[in-house]
Image 1: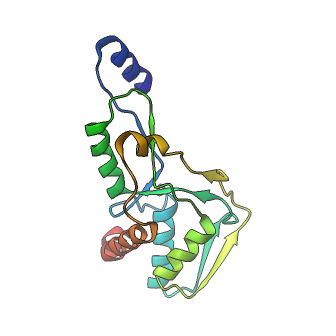
Image 2: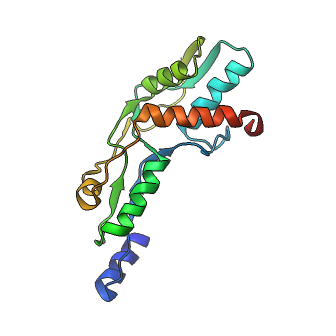
Length: 171
């Protein structure tokens, strides 16, 4: 409804509104609540909990074949500012990192960064979710010059380090 309202205001009054559609966000300060978090904070929490409790096994839902695009919050903030400065059209704009990773690769990367030496069990009785989630961010690049600056692994490391530093207050 906000998109249609913004387009109507643009047409009728020349009012500029921006409708940005971000892909999965992650970064320091994310929601690590075990009941409401998304995949990256949920996995980081799982690995941290196993490490701090001395466990050498974690269980992850699905097969790991699904893929996702993740967008670092610092890059998201930057593209929002760029869009307010450079985008004057009423069409929606996808914003993301233009990078895709399977859940299995994500799990392996988090395990590596966190130096988890234990075993990962894939619970294939649980759903993978949507097989693939990646946005076409061509318009964001073309219209505002946006390109993601934070490489995925660097953003993931920042998120993990933030969580580990905050671990005792978050658990």
